[in-house]
Image (tube, rainbow, N blue to C red; front, side, top):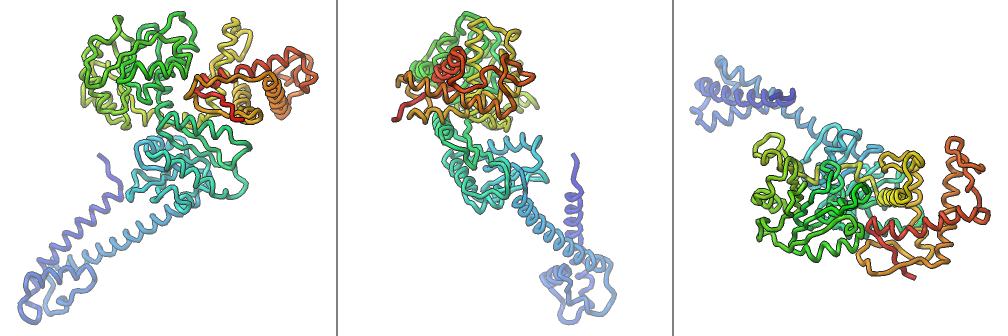
Length: 563
């Protein structure tokens, strides 16, 4: 165990103070015969002893030599007092300096909240960000050093945001447990003027309900113009499902078991199906057993919302309440490759995993349990091995730690739709047997060249403007039976708008017209007005518009005609 120099000095002066107090009392008792007046009581000796710490002890004016203990105490006690005053002033000054540093910070990151989500996010940010300011209601900072400053207050208050330097910050994360509070924080941040000619503040608000999060994101994308605040909303369960499948991918056709269709279970099932469809390597549908109190209702509703789930997964649903376990008769005949216990109640999730004995024999890392508290249970089973982890079969997945990642949170709705656009492009061209050798765009999103990612983002960012032009709006796909189809004249109008957007984007990036497409020289034969385009080029734009409802449906959204 190591101790800081400050800690050692503080302990030293505490011990010195106790020694001075004891020596002063002993010395005063020995010096008492030389003090004029009646013999002092014990309380008199203690009072005179305490006076040594304030540079004033009247009995020392008596005649006679001072005992050695009293001689030591009359110098040690004032020394302790001086140190205490200096240390107090230093703490007050450093506290004030931290407030000034927070208020005057520039291009820093502000995290609102002091719960598990905020702390996990700050731990990730510490590795990349130069300065972080936390805003919380706790009088005691959950963490703090030269890189993490702390402001005590309500983040919905403009004065608190100013104290955190939000008007000079680059990114704001609203991570309180209440979604309405996070929305109010974003509203307060929007009302704060920026200092100087700076880029817009990027704000990310945590919304605990996935459907509400999708509704907020849809409304934000539909907002015309470029707002002063780049605002997006994120949901931990959706982000955590992506991370989980990156860490524990589905690699074969053996069955999957999903226990619990809370928000995380639904997000996980959707992400399993999305990745399965993109793999496209097996004609067999993946067997998935779903166990939940309302599995027979929740699973079909999810399949109706995301049609590709039913296309790539063969679902078997069991309506079983958590108390009605064990699962002896519910598991598939073939040994599952992975069992995901997804209950929102982490105690219930752990209880299910540790008391359902048939789940223990599916192989290493096969039993994955969702918990919330960052690394608490994971450390107990995996790191310090305080508890035995079923010979490696048990894996604890803490969503706060996994999803509290600034890289994932920064992938806003535009990024989500850009991915969906590219995934649709891959599916269409795979069906045409087009491979990477013939088309450099036939790779996964992560391997896509930056210029092509930017092109997809630009297309996604323009969706709200196009829909508004024909009296439509973007909405979360909660009513899939609400039919929508573009009218012929709308397809023509939106195709022309898409071509004009694409044209301006390429011209802005230095492209010019050329008889043949040449990426190196930035030449393109379609870099012309709509009236002069070839029929084939126009049809490509029409196909882009026609595919939009399907792309949005895959991302969990739908188009609604409002006028």
